[in-house]
Image (cartoon, rainbow, N blue to C red; front, side):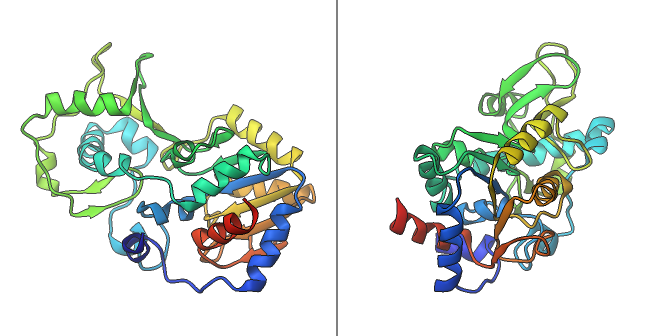
Length: 293
């Protein structure tokens, strides 16, 4: 894990005993706890995030994630997306849950957590054994056609892409978030964009909410219901920079829910939280496991 800390986790201070004790009491004293997780929970599994100082995508490269409208309207953008994803997905899918995912899964089994709302698309919560999870931004593990009803598993889809690009080889220059990978732009020109086996369209898209798109209203409402039913909310590994997650903290604040944040850097909700712990998620959850599970 040390190599992941160096590559993906930003510089941080060690967890203090006082910080640990306060957050431990917050969790163990909850009657119905909802946990909102973000990219900072998965960086210790070797998945980089977007915004962390020094190690996030925005600090390491000029590349920016694809926008929803760009993907839907520009065939060249789809070609670029799938070429990079084709190279990056095998690396991404090999990532395994870290101690934070494992502890949250065990807490669920022991009914210490009512629900997890995750902003991550990596399915590491499920790999760790969690089942009470809402994937706010979807998942990379499913591919759907935007023209017809075709749906396929991303693992199977990798083989499909391979068969139509059997001569395509590209080295990864930079690993980026969400199964993306930086490769030589010149090579992308020779990549064959995958077509839907049912309707022939090239509008195949992972079941991920791209930047600029909206989370499904029914999913948002379901998460609101979980927040309303909770007495305490824990944010773990999220800066809450995007409104899709931040809105649940605002709603919780309006409803006078107790809120705690565990995150290395500043967050958008620092001014409304009851408790802020600036530390690495894995450090806290390792101690919590040893003392409570």
